[in-house]
Length: 550
Image (cartoon, rainbow, N blue to C red; front, side, top):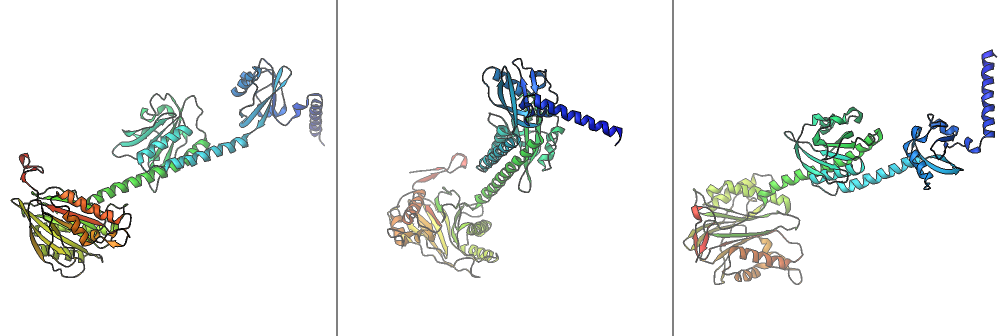
């Protein structure tokens, strides 16, 4: 063994004897594995053990807690001296600890217990509870604006001092929701430049976030912060991923006096952003589909009827299901124009129910509108319509009734043609009910269509009723098995003698629905054509519906 090795061995032996002598001479707590520091009433460190030196090498005997110790320990020591001794806690040497005060004469000994694992477990539990709460709140609304407000409020309450949610914009205008902790979110559209915030333009395009340390909070534009927020200390920008396309971006803000966002907090913010992005994307998809549905439904819904050319028209429609707005029954009224003097009325019933039947009704109504120049010849119109339906790859067919109405003095002249449809009924002002003798073949099933046209004149107060088979085939009554039938329809129509068109249509449909009750039924449609009592006065300037006089 060399001389150097002998010297090293001797030094180690000396150090071991010194440590052993100290452990023997000093109190037992100095050898405890837990960090311990003793401070007197003046806040001066009186003693420390080796475990504490390991975690706080900068603190030594004789120094003051206020100078070399963490602020939370200094405050806890002052409370202990004031007689309100309690367990305190904070960060020590990069670990979470709980500090327990124990009096040793005039001094206070602080024992530190490592609670990093427990603190991490509590943090994960809080985060899990927050994500569950956030998911429930976000999925509670399918309104895009409301969803943005919920996202901003949750982020400002649990993740930062304030939050801004920005959705993809158009032509420089972006929907935004900004919220400070404890406040209400402000939602509007703003003309902003996302490039002013590093990472924001990329986040709106779905690119990964940039680390918060790369972002200078002092350069944040005013539109990003809530009113009276103050100086921004740190901010995080993270994308809101949606269903295949970006749903927007989330910006988290902290004031300058708060600690900057840690890497762990940025990762958790992305977890929340993933849930918020899915909810916002679902709300946006629903809003777009709803808007498309409304546009398409506008042409499928029956029109609102009123007086046209001195003749009163009124209609009522009820789909087979209460949840449906459209079905297989339809009606239209086409006013006279320069090429024809008569108003054309169409009421029909497509084979089937629901949306598929409604699609065919839309095709029929569009085709009839295109064939209006041939409206004077009902047979030709039905022939062309039949050819159009046969050209479509569909097994569905339809029944129709056409009515051409022309005001002639106080009377109304009607030309009626049924194509496989129940015959129209006429109720005179005195209560007499007549069935119009018109028959024909349904359209869309056979290569040829044959039909007969009947002409009838309505006197003042007379009404012609067009209806679908959903009225007479409504099954209900006391036992729930009996059809409403033509007899009951005639009796109900006789009671409507002299009533205006709107009252007749409402009355007939109401009685049919009462007969059905809550039982299933077919689509129902009725249309009343009434010769008004009195003389029509045109509105000033020739525009508008005008009014009737006696």
